[in-house]
Length: 104
Image (cartoon, rainbow, N blue to C red; front, side, top):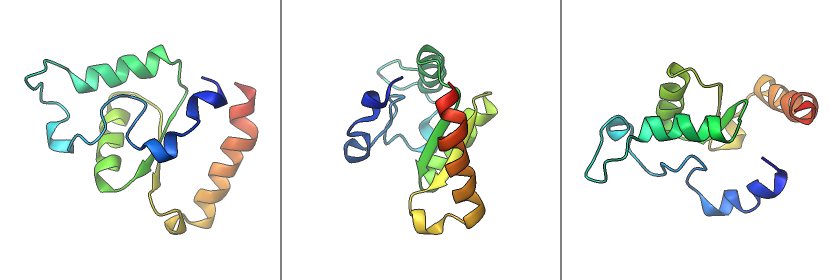
């Protein structure tokens, strides 16, 4: 993915994995549309050749992030209110953005 792929994502909301606004209790349920949401997320993660998924959100987002972690994906969870991030978490995020991501 390129930086241009993320343009406007904050104002768009939802997810680049295609399962926006699905409650945690329904993530593994295949509904009328026949879509296996977890399978789709795993396939999209791999198709995009992601190294890690950064999830910014509340309790529901982090429940789903943990579900994906349990499926073997690399996940970083951040609270939706950035004022709640500790100094150590901010340093880790800064390190990832400055040193790890540019090497990809």
